[in-house]
Image (tube, one colour):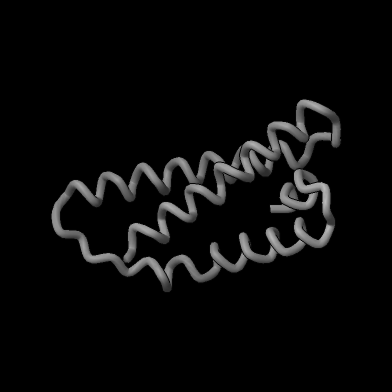
Amino acid sequence: MGVCLRSINRKLLGLILTIISITIIFFLPIINKIKFINNKYFLIKKIEIFILIIVITLISFIGSKPSKHPHILIAKFLTIIYFLILKFILIQNY
């Protein structure tokens, strides 16, 4: 999740986003207590978790690359997708 530090120009905002991303991942099993009404929701949850795992893997891979132009752009894109997926997962619970 250190890519947040690299993809945001302001250091304090990057640090805050990194702390938020780690905190959300830590509390996600506690927050995620949705009751499945039918199998439709189960498939959606599987797809969300699969996409989240892919994004986290790509963020980890991009984080190991040097801070140059294409890597920074990809890191910004993946950071936005990461937070959108987490927002979608958290909104679905309510």
